Amino acid sequence: MSVGKRPHIVPLNYGYVEGIILFHCALTGRKLECMKRNPQACFTVGRQSGRLIQHPQGAHCPIDTDSVICYSRARIIESFPEKLERHNAFNRRLQPDAEEIPAEAVSGCCAVEIQILEMTGRRQRGLKHQYWKYQFEE
Image 1 (cartoon, one colour):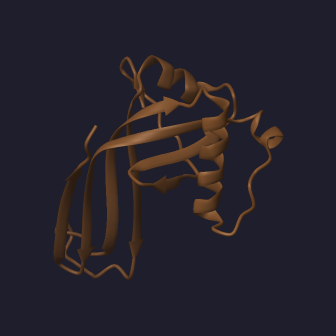
Image 2: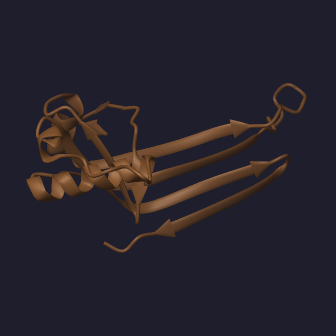
């Protein structure tokens, strides 16, 4: 996220459901203030696996990696029925057999969805690179 010239990066526990990234948080805080002032967001995940292959200094650093960058718009969910539904969707994404979350457990939390507008990715295996891009409909 970014407000003015100051970026704000937030590590998240999240769920991905049909082009939407879901997360929950406290009812107040910096990330909510940032989203209210500028809903544009960039979301990224990455991982490195395998072993680093020795290479000359200054040369390409070959290690198996996967990364995704999502250009998106964040929305704080205001409606309680929708907030309850999104909390349950988030929970089922992480725990598929989870029971429904009771309404009283959700009342003290905020729910946010990040609508992905564009997603790009990179996969590297050894010296082979794969790049892809997906444009979502608004």
